[in-house]
Length: 69
Image (cartoon, rainbow, N blue to C red; front, side):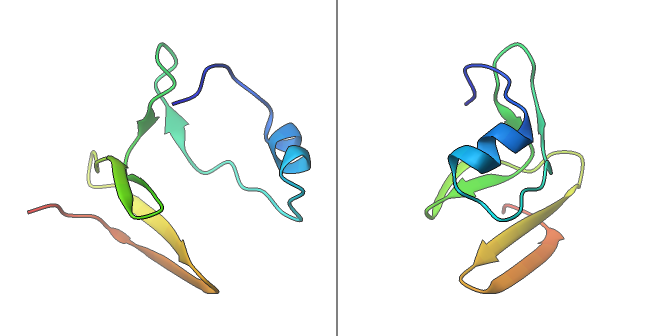
């Protein structure tokens, strides 16, 4: 959950990132991500509208539609 909006360049600089991608949408009123979000193996939000999710595991990048049964 985001407490405020921040430009991606500031987020990248703060994290010492060499690259950054603004690849998600958030509900403006609450800062809750719209769509699948998992951090450290914990599912924070589920899929919506049959959208594709991207995952990073080590040096592997994964993209697919997420279906919860």
